[in-house]
Amino acid sequence: MATTTTISNLPTAMSTPKIPSSQRIANLGPVILGDKVASCYKLSSVCHVASAQPFQQGLIMTSGAIKYDKIVTKAIFRSSPTPDIPGLPIDLTGKRAFIAGVADENGYGWAIAKSLAAAGAQILVGTWVPALNIFESSLRRGKFDESRKLKDGSLMEIAKVYPLDAVYDSPVDVPEDVKTNKRYAGATNWTVQEVAESVKKDFDKIDILVHSLANGPEVSKPLSETSRKGYLAALSASSYSYISLLKHFLPIMNQEGSAISLTYIASERIIPGYGGGMSSAKAALESDTRVLAFEAGRKKRVRVNTISAGPLGSRAAKAIGFIDRMIDYSFTNAPLQKELHAEEVGNTAAFLASNLSSAITGSVIYVDNGLNAMGVGIDSPMFENLDIPKEHH
Ligand SMILES: NC(=O)c1ccc[n+]([C@@H]2O[C@H](COP(=O)([O-])OP(=O)(O)OC[C@H]3O[C@@H](n4cnc5c(N)ncnc54)[C@H](O)[C@@H]3O)[C@@H](O)[C@H]2O)c1
Image (cartoon, rainbow, N blue to C red; front, side):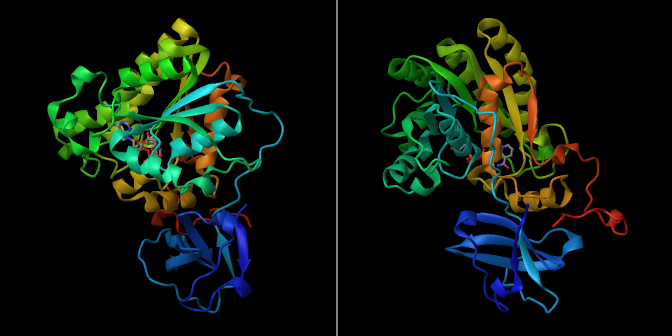
């Protein structure tokens, strides 16, 4: 359910509406004002609304304050409360998770860590070496404390943060220029093999392995203009890194553990703008999920699945450059017209990590408000005169 604010709570022209603290997130996504839709994002503690366009036309990316006209009677914030999940409990008490790809509080890795922690799992994270110092100092200084809060009021604890660069399997693979790079100075034992060894030394075993990382240096280039180097770098960081992680962590995973990665619909449908070989990398990741499910299943009954997540304004996604438009597109076109919460992906990961999903392996699980199931984009001018049901208020 979208939340609504009546006109009395709305600002006069050119000012900004207040938003409840529960909705204070960096990007609130679009907001509907009468028959208009506008971008809405957090600016300190208020919601700043970028310019509005007629709702039927879909999206809006230009900035500037909105002028409210007389027909506006209420604002409907697309951000809906995160669903409460009563009933069947997910219990990961006594389980230990290693989550690769957490460097701030905005991405899917962080949300997965929170859901696994809320279900009782112990959390270890792997943080990309160049992002390590700022992540650790922000954690120490309490910058993430608000976002560490779990539903029961406690704070998510991260038992240990490991420096990691998943592009390198072992020390012999690290080139000289990286070894001497000042962004790597001070960190040690960060190749995949060394991290697995350190985790074994510190904690012996893990039960859950999460791969929530991707990198494509040429992501903004169309595939046909991508260099061989850029393409292979995308596959190395975003696909092979998962094979490498599983290869090195499987020996220290308990029987019947669970491995989860994050993929994106660009692997199987054309998403212009998701370039540089990133679409190919996600296709490889999904194919590898099936083969790895067989191999890890036969070896240790470990299940291997991937979550195809809808668009989220994470740090990585912002680097691609069109994430706000993808969020708007999803809202307009998906069967469920609601904001996608990172927590919904986190909760699916908790389900996949638990024995409630004991017969699910080798699967691509869509957590995208159903967008993957659409055959047409309903925001096309072709459908202008069609009676398409809009969000029910
Ligand atoms: N944001 C989206 O819209 C979206 C949609 C579908 C899938 N995903 C996937 O979700 C996963 C997490 O991404 P996110 O969008 O939450 O962004 P994010 O920025 O939170 O996560 C990406 C992480 O990868 C790390 N990383 C990059 N290169 C690395 C390397 N060589 N070694 C170790 N870590 C490295 C970064 O430091 C970062 O922490 C990715 O696989 C991404 O493709 C994202």
